[in-house]
Picture 1 (tube, rainbow, N blue to C red):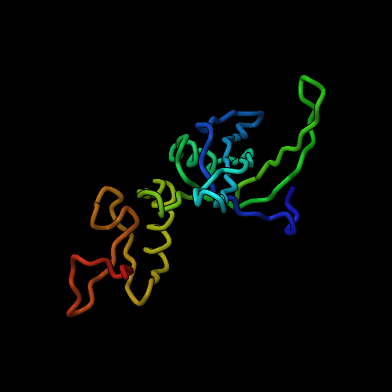
Picture 2 (cartoon, helix red, strand yellow):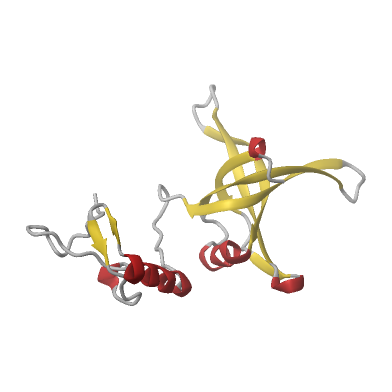
Length: 175
């Protein structure tokens, strides 16, 4: 399924709440469906009409899948990027159909339609703190010093030293 020519981005509404299954060797797969509408303006009435809905089955593995299951709900507008696989299937009535599965590589909320909140995972915070203390690094010229994930001022992902004359209430990466 990982052919670079099959990489797609889907923007639509979540049609089912994500559910996670655990397989052999604790391999976890989260799955949900996303629908996209083809809307057109009716030239006679001037009204927008839904012409058809395309449905995609989104499959997400391991930690990304667990994060998706904790973050995404039915009805939310999302974007998903991943590798597409087209499958033909036969319905109970004997007719055939085509399904598109997407092995997601990234998922996010569409912020044009609402807000979202980000929380770093504790194990990622610990790794960032270890790297920062061992090697030290900067982001946009500001020194990263680790941080307390519970400190809202640090954004859950470390803190930055404030440059002279810089407002300490303003995050250095804010536009």
